[in-house]
Length: 230
Image 1 (cartoon, one colour):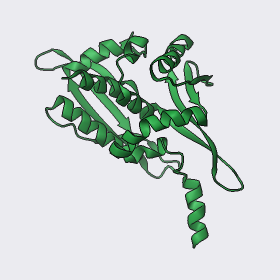
Image 2: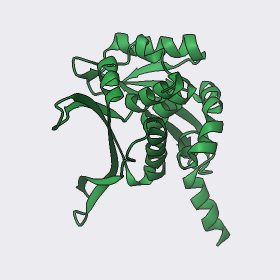
Image 3: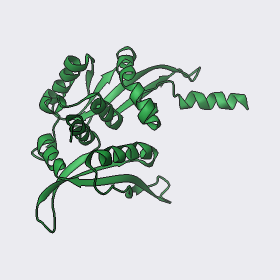
């Protein structure tokens, strides 16, 4: 396994991914099991992750299965997410490197292992592009780029510092109403620098996730334009 491949596996564990230790029922040896869940609308992104993991680790290719989430708002049908799981000894290494006292902890030692692809995966998992619209024209007037995080304030500052020192990206820290939940936030001008950095890869590799990196994908405005053409 190359250094870059190890970095990719680490990145997959940072955002939506979860790693736990398990015991083999036959050999009684400990190993790590990676799992990640996405909504059905992000199935193509999940398939990209599955193929990436399989290309690195080989072995039996994981299957995508449905996992119950909740009932629909009307209570008439169940809603299911899509999930994959993969066991491998290296995930045990990642579990012990990434988790402290059972909690995923993004300390600087972890962040320094990330490549640009790692940043992209992290943002696609935990980031968002929040658009603000002009009510009269139904067009985007500005947007904010965000990454949602958990941790104490000093840990969030450490992440903010990492982005500034390594990637020359300036994030502001916002506190949410929930305890230990924070948001790293960029305005439009600073956000453009970040989005231009990651856009080419997302367009080429995971076009289904372009809505997180391209503010011009304005579904509200497109709907209005389509209506006007009828």
